[in-house]
Length: 191
Image (cartoon, rainbow, N blue to C red; front, side):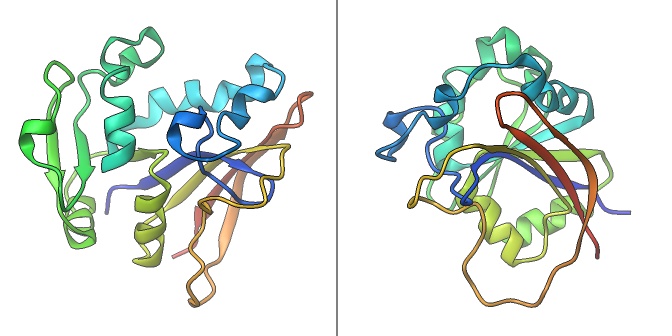
């Protein structure tokens, strides 16, 4: 049995996953999540993920954004001692933060595939849309935990790869909609 690899992310209705938390992330409409009325129930998926997560995975840019904040964040305290993996061809070990549990660098999708073959529970990829797209293209993602926001951004980094590929069937595991227009959709990949 392989470890489950889960991509969890915020996405606009038109499939953009670019800069949900702020303009400093690069998109001209960055921070679009913050412009949706805050309804605590619409973020309950994030709390549920804390109990399912046995390891975290990031692309370089997401790691660089989260590493200065999450180690001391009360909201992310449950992640502090979990193993973390950063997938990057350019990052050196000197860029890894201390006091945030074990952190390992992976250099390729082959390294991710090998990690999935080890024993252990679910590995969650937070943000890291570029990494997620490359892992999707390599058929390594097992589940999508999506919060879809009621906004159309028109441009930006897509949550999904534009490459021509064989159909991949999904099974809806869970869904909900909230008063602020956010939709939770949890899909499992049918292998």
